[in-house]
Image 1 (cartoon, rainbow, N blue to C red):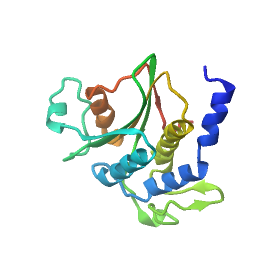
Image 2 (image 1 turned 180 degrees about the vertical axis):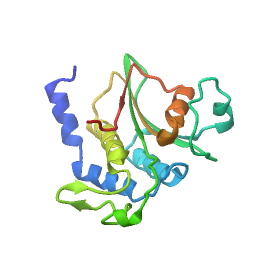
Image 3 (image 1 turned 120 degrees about the horizontal axis):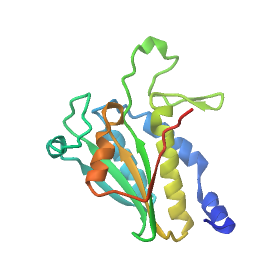
Amino acid sequence: MIGERAETQALKALDTDACIRLAQDLIRVPSVTGNERAVQDLVALFLEESGLEVDRFEADLSRLKAHPRFPGMEVERTEAVLVAGLLGQKGERSLILNGHVDVVPVGDRQAWHASPWSAHIQAGRLYGRGACDMKAGLAVGISAAAALKKSGLPLRGRLILQSVVGEEDGGIGSFAMADRGYRADAAYVLEPTR
């Protein structure tokens, strides 16, 4: 269990304004399923600038498709770019924070009161395609990992932040992360539920 002093130190390192800006930056990058490279580049850059070890890789789609447990894909894709941010060392325990950057198509643009990629804030709420599902959640996870790094608190294990693709069409991104060897004692999917 984390001590009160350590918790306070980690919370002081959390920059909530930067977290909101990151969520906005992620939303402003259109990343409809199959076109996630640009937003994954942004995630990798932020993690690198935060001092985390970064593993940015392209999944071998043909090899994954041949796997007996392949989850399938609803959208044919030519690439799957994945990013893992690593903090701490392999040790006593490990935790995965998992979020996805792919979003469903915009649909009827006339139904939007502003551009789906505007990431505007109105009455204290953030709007845009993927704000809830799930770029804001991913921004929170990334910001928490960055705060832990900034705080200098030693971890007794490893935190693995996963930014995946293909959640909206089968789950290939999380499957590819597991196939790459990213496993943990526990995982927390950053997607909100009711």
